[in-house]
Each structure stands twice: as structure tokens, then as C-alpha cells.
Amino acid sequence: MNHRMILCLICYILRVEAICLLPSLGISLFQQETAAAVGTAISAGGAAVLSLSTFLCPPKDRQIGAREGFISVALCWVAVSLIGALPFFLSGAVPSYVDCVFETVSGFTTTGASILTDIEALPMGLLYWRSFTHWLGGMGVLVFLLAVMPMGKGKNSLLHVMRAESPGPQVDKLVPKLQDSAKILYAIYIGLTLLQVILLLAGGMPLFDALTTAFGTAGTGGFAIKGDSLMGYSRYLQAVCTVFMALFGINFSVFYLLLLRQFLKVLKNQELLLYLGLMLGSIAVITWDILPIYRQVGEALHQAAFQVSSIMTTTGFATADFNQWPALSKTLLVLLMFVGACAGSTGGGMKVARLLLLCKAGRRSVKRMLRPRSVSQVHMDGQAVNEETLQNTYSYLAVYMAILAVSILLVAVDEFSLETNATAVIACLNNIGPGLDLVGPMGNYAAFSPLSKIVLSFDMLAGRLEIFPMLMLFVPMAWHRT
Image (tube, rainbow, N blue to C red):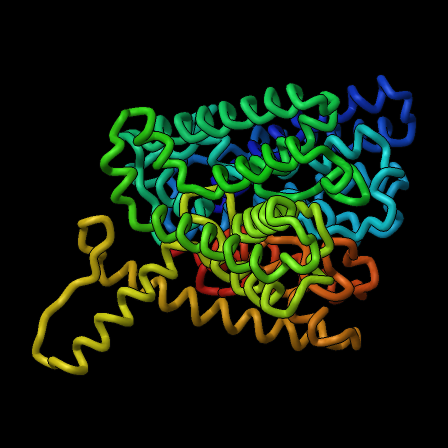
């Protein structure tokens, strides 16, 4: 285990976090928010000082193996969350440090679950930082480092880091060099974010609102700066967010193929077709189901499209209290929480690619039962899927269900309804944010006990990092030197 290289990566991340806190500090100073400015300044300074540790004990070997990749990613996300929580705590805006960590973990993991009961009372500088954590966490904090600076040395060093942080059953390089792939991903990410900001400004949204809303949409996070989420904005602004939530739920390699004008490959992408089919089918069913509530097809379609796009991409914005919708619509939305967005997107959930693989593997198993001697492979987009990828998918599903069950049991100690407890865990593990009942789109997580908030924070981190990097922290063998 290369402990010094892991420490070096954590220091790099803290240095980046210190820099990213500066815009929030500037906004607090401009708005004369003294307490927020002091808290943010101390946090940025503390992160910068801690990041100097890498100069005291620089790594002799800069190679990153599989273990270092998983452990360093998990520790980096824990570190940025603990430091990122300090501005809320030191400013006094959120008195409980556990609540601050919960809010910050929710931000970086792009979950959008909040303990705030009065969002609009938060200082503007902290509102900006709260939303910006979504944008940083959406593509991945270490993927950002891959894009801007060289890190580890060795043939597969960068691949181990990206594999541990990138969502999906497998990681594919867009171009031969992994660092160039990271740069392309971030270029697409920034380009789409800027395009959304421009369209929101064109609809009359104030600049600060447009930036924070775009951060939440791009990272598929869902932190809004208004207590009613996006309900108070115009239909045009809500429609723009509907479209961009769906776009950020698509595998970014699809956008790269579009830039290369390889349209035939895009049209044959099975994950994309299933993603769009599930989304459009769900919109149609929910529109029909809620039509008696809204009475106009256009309004029902608008509300259904926004909520389906928000839930399936695990963004968590809301324009309606779907807690009050019929049982069929609520059940369908809960099922979409499990499915999530595409692999290689900023969305959470189990991913459409895994669902597709499991369906194909199930069909192969049925064929083998009927014809035991037959030899068949699972294919996706015309290419054979290796058995290791399938085995990893099965393992992911098994561990996912185990964490889900244990978390629901632990949270149940708070004596809330099963609907509240179960959907709270589902929403956090799948990085969605709103659930049902007390944690519905108009509710929050403030009533949960500190223990439940810690459990849910772990679920958010595990869900964002595809479970295994977080579990590695608790495996003694992973920390051995050999």
C-alpha cells in the first residue's frame, strides 16, 4: 500500500477545494456577510495548510495500484466533505457539525437531501458554495484533477483512480490517453453548463439563480436556493431544466460521438435507447394518471416530464408535491429511483447499463436452462461483455441490496413511518434527494437523529462511489503494505 501517494492525492484535493472556496468567500465579502466570510476564510485557509503535508513527506513511488485507487478515492471524498462542511459550521449558519457534514456530503455526492428548514435564510455566499459542491462532485473531484494535472505514474495508475470514481459497470477511454479523456469530459461538462446558464438568463432568471440552478442540474444534484425548489419559476425555465436534467443523465461518450458526427453509433446505443424509452414511457403513464388533478393535458405533461426527468436522473428538483399524486405515479417514481441514469453520466442510481446487463444475463440463463450445452455470450452495442464485468454487476447488486436493508433497519430506530425510512435510504443510496412522506419534495431530513444522518451520509457516499471504494475502508487486507 503506497500510503504517501494516497496522502499526496488527498493534499491535491484539499488544495483544489481551498481554491474553489474563494468565489464563495468573495460573494460573502461583497454581500457583507461577516460570519459567513470568516467561516469560509478559515475553512479555505485550513484546507490550504493541510494540503502542504505533501511537501513534508513527498511520495517516493508515485505509482497508483488498484488498492490505492479505491482507498484514495474514498478518503478524498470523505476529506472534502469534512472540510467543506466547515463554512456552514464556523459561520453558525448550521449549529450541528453532523448536520453540516450531511448537507455537504449531500452536495458533493449530488444527492440534494437537505436538513435545512429555511433555505432562503442561508447567506448568499454559503448558498453558492452549497450549489457549487454539486458541480464539483457531478463529474468527480479526482477526474477534475486528472484533467488539470498529472498525478500518478505507471501504466494503469490513472485508470485505477477513474475506475473507482466514475459511475457505471466499466470505464471506457474516449481517446488513448486517459488524461485527454478527462479533459474532453470536462470540456463537454463545462460547455453544457454554460449553455444552460445562457438559456436560463434568456428566460429572465437572475444571474445568481441561473448559476446555482445550472450547478444543480449539471451535477444532477437538486439543491435549490428557494424553499419551494423550482416551483416559483416560469414554465419556460422549468422546461429548460427538464431538458438539461435529461441531457446530463446521458453517458457523456454519446456527446463525444455526436461531436465526431458518428450518428449511427449513437442511434444504435442500447443503453441510450432504453434510457429514453423508460423516460418517455414513464412520462406518458404518469401524465395519464395525474390528468384528473391538473385537468389540462399540457400542464399534466409538463409536471410529469419534469418530475420523471428529475427523479430518473437523480437530480431531485421539484415543481410539484408528488407526495400528493396517485399511488401508481408515486410507485413508478420510486422504481425510477432504483434505475437511475446512464453509466458515464453525472446521474446516480443503479444505472441503466446495469439494468440492461442484468436483463441480458437473465435471458442467457433461461436459454442455458432450456439448452444446457449451448454456448452464448452477452452482447451490448455489438460487442461481447466479458464475464468479469457480469460478475462485478452481480456483486454490486448483492452488496447494494445488503446495504439498503441494513440502512433501513438502522434508520428505523427513529420510529418514522416505513414509507419515510425506506424512501429516505433509497433516495440517499441512489443520490436522488427527495423521497416520500416526511422526506418528500416539500419535506427535509432535519428530523432524523444524528446516527441516522451518519448512516444516510455513508449511503450517499457509497451510492456516488459505486459502493466498493467505501467498503474498502473497512477491509483490513486493503491497508496492508503488500
